[in-house]
Length: 222
Image (cartoon, rainbow, N blue to C red; front, side, top):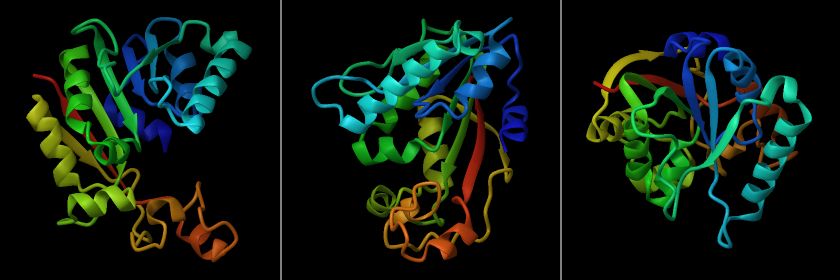
């Protein structure tokens, strides 16, 4: 539900917006042209070095190629690395209006640098700027190790991380909720579409459930 999600976060066409780890560019295809004339779009992608997994390198190659092939959409988009081991700057301090992240927090939790990422977001935002988070939602009380293995993160933990970084919770939405998601699968959240890690095994069952139940949280930098 991209339109409802972006409206909830308050994204407007004149804003400077960073999307964290845009992957294949699903939201980039919406945001870059929307911000092209009067705003700014930054794709804060994976850090690329000798330790970067091949699939992440390929995603970044594909994203750059996609931007190059459609200049009418992406000619003003900028790509910047963000993450371990030492790339923690998305943009100059206090220059962004909005930072958005879609289904990425579990990756940072698994890697152990979620706090560094939230600090980077806080530094890049203007006072009054918005952090918008969409993430696979774990059942309340789920422990960190289960979050790491399942790909689901509790709302409480995301809120705690944001507040520790200096953000204030400004709102919650059920735009991206899915009550059919039980969160109990052999391959964690990746059992569900779009990944379907079990391939043909129980494929129709998981397609019927659909994509994961997701929190949608809006935070503001005071």
